[in-house]
Length: 508
Image 1: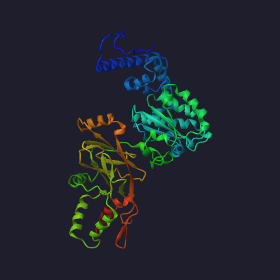
Image 2 (image 1 turned 90 degrees about the vertical axis):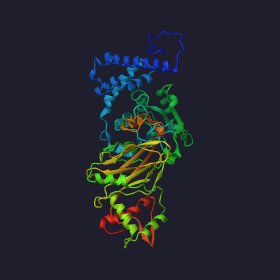
Image 3 (image 1 turned 135 degrees about the vertical axis):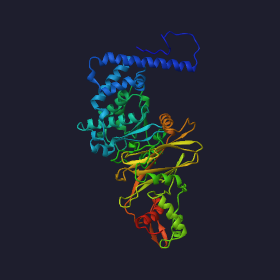
Image 4 (image 1 turned 60 degrees about the vertical axis):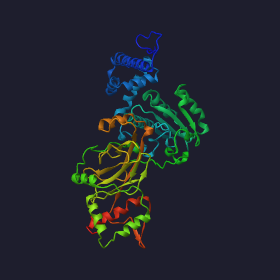
């Protein structure tokens, strides 16, 4: 029985002229009735006899989250009877798989290390990519449950963070043999989107499928059903770029994405809010940090060439102090603990400096903080967020704010509580243009990030680099010139003179 017939009230057709506004209001009223009816019937017909059948957290969410109920109704075309059956099956599975309690420790480490299943990148519509590298999968009944848990882990993790935003599944069949095809596992993945995570599937992109597997994927089409079969996209190196741009495709697909999976930590989808968001930096240098940021002028963000670096260091005599050197030392003493970055990543919304790596001093150097400089290159306000793979380890100020047109913002990153910086730690800077901002306070920014489209968000990632010694070992002096090995040397030139002065108190 279908409860919604497109009209408000009793459902009797009336010959009246409806405006788009009244039609939208009418649809909203009918949708609300369907949600209410679904909840009422689920409680009466499914909960009364066997309340322990489901996880109480799912039952509670069903009663409170309209969008969740609507996602089941949408997948079953607003047929309440079919929707209830789907919810029943989905909730039983969720309890059986313990999805609420799945963590990294629930998954065997080898399965996380192999890189067969992970989230990374976006398609051309801005949907997250779930990669399934089939060549790493060997059919084995002993490990199939763990592999299913890994799929559930990623989907539940994504659903909690990006509620309602679709996923594109990338089935990478390159270098795959017949032993890697496990139809039970494929069917499980299909059911995840048909029953357990309705409304989350954007499409399934199948890359480089061997001809021997044609028969197998005819079965997959039957599992999807006639309405969802159009979501299957069979591609080769040429066609796959119709759905995913080359920046998010690996080289073997004709792309330019340099990403290489490694674990730990979890891949870059593990970015979270750092400590003390928009709050003070609770450290012994709090007062001086505030003075440093407020008084310091903005340094140019253009990349300094090797020749300019050589000229810069030639001007600063390493043995005899000068008035210019004394002036630099005064600035450096005010900015103690900070490494002013010289390299720059030029994005469409923000210029971000440094371009690739945040430099932190070793424990013995005492250099505790790193600096990120953002410059707005648009004509509108740009909202930004900073996320990290180690949220318990770092304080970031500010981590969620905005930048006016043409202005710059200094972001201070400091390790918390004596915790050690790791080269595996990553930072993600997310930015989006606020074309018609209603305000830039915490409430307005929170609402903005909920509503902004994913394909409107600029992202840039930074690695962490630990300077093991305060001695200037990275740059080398040869025949009066500076030899730099790579791009990161741009951020080492100023560090060369700063670390030397801080370590032995000598003039520049």
